[in-house]
Amino acid sequence: MKQIRRILYATDFSPASRRAFTAAVDLAKELHSALTIVSVVPPVMPMAPEVYVDAATYDRLEEQSRNWTAKRLKHLAGRASKAGARVATTLRSGDPVAQIVRAAKSAHADLMVVGTHGRGAIPKFFLGSVAERVVKMAPCPVLTVRGTSRA
Image (cartoon, rainbow, N blue to C red; front, side, top):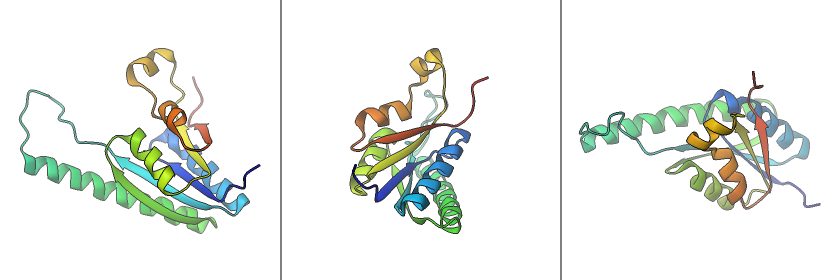
């Protein structure tokens, strides 16, 4: 079995990703692996498509989103480091699935850890599943961790 030296944990900071964070940190410590935490800022989309939003507003919204995400990444990195993991962060923009897969390739990840919402078939059909698409496109094994129990 190939030694796991580099773990990539992808997060959207949702409740579903919290348990995956714990699993990623625990694995990194136990396996003495480097942990890279990645988050992707998706493109800003207007809430009402018929409303015009000028470029300056889009830029401001994107900057605010990047700043918020960078702050959250720093917080997670601090928690992981405090727990004893060697950690780095990556902030990307664009399509979450494509950017997570690219980040895994760039980091030469041996394992990816992602959270899943555990939705049923109908919501998944309409909303899609980032975790499922990451698994299909991943350059390495992926550990999916259900974030919450189904009720």
